[in-house]
Image (cartoon, rainbow over all chains, first blue to last red; front, side):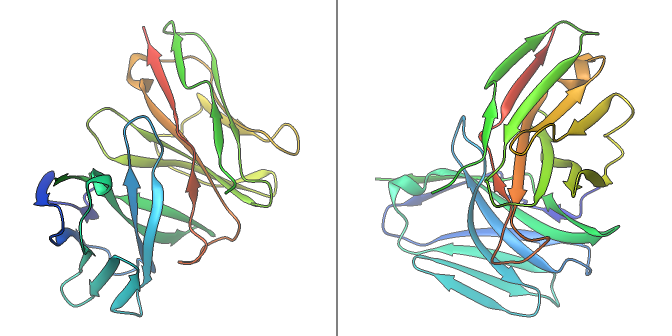
Length: 114
Length: 116
């Protein structure tokens, strides 16, 4: 089951530059998408989300873009900071049997170099 | 900011033993979830719970698993007879609404379950 895929296991970026994390999905029934950040020994922390009817959502340094025709979303972090170094998970919300569950990607480890 | 809290942070159990993982969801949240992450793999949905009953469970959530909300604050996951392959990080999550981009699920820090 590979409904949500993050093809880059890791990414290194210089401080101050843009970080772009990518996510692909296969199920057109997802109703919204989320990005979570995870530090070691902590649970996933919600970062930003986007409804499937929108193509962009922005929150401070974080912007998520959704391309429905390509079934692709991306997270842009500008400017990147060393504190952004973490594992980033893409997740999709799926409605089945009266409830909503999240389908996660495998994560991308972002390292921001000072 | 309110948090989902999970105890213990690490549980070591002999194979075949019962284990109970505990969670205290955010107080005004109504929907509760368990996910797990086997080392090196993706976070996987196990079960969702609302109004004192299971809303949905995955194929992983077999008869060895059960969930309960024994009082107004705790939400527990029980594994009756643990197997080696149950070793994983177990995350509890809660949400205020059934689903909304602006009301996401909030996750605890997880319980690392190690089966010997």
